[in-house]
Length: 62
Image (tube, rainbow, N blue to C red):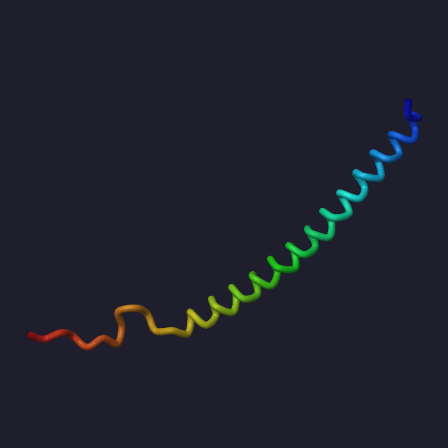
């Protein structure tokens, strides 16, 4: 039979390893989200400079 303290230590190490990986993944996702927000802001700024839809169209005459 295994020593309960050794088993518990092994389980704790596994949990720490798993959470360490999740922390790195979360940081990566936060960076990507920030980049996407910056791109979205840029696109919104560009869109604001575009003429409104429907403006500057010549009327259709039959």
